Length: 146
Figure (tube, rainbow, N blue to C red):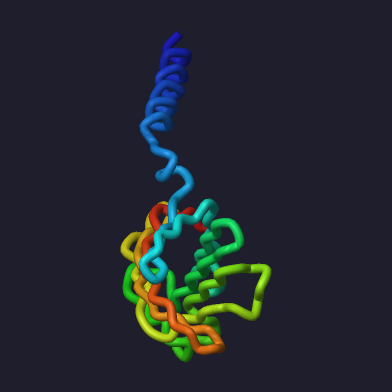
């Protein structure tokens, strides 16, 4: 009987913990302001690649990819010469690969990395080949690293 009560207690505690979580806490979020226009990712994912993390947010045909040159809490430059991978890429339309904006200045700030989840913010100037410049700032919260 004690085992049944213990198992039932564990199940109830787990259910209470689960129901106390918001959708944001379970899947994470990414939002941005692009030249004054609000953008909200409908999907986001992060993956470890060697000594860095690649965080991608998408919404329709638009994507933002953050790849700071590290994975620990701290501030990382979006200078394209700070590593062998571009730290910031904004694509207004993924079906038009010719119109890609890359970070030319600014930073990505990882404010929290625990339980395999990342949170932070970014503030970037990005330019395309024309060159047109977009000012992009935003945040990512509780993104699970796969």
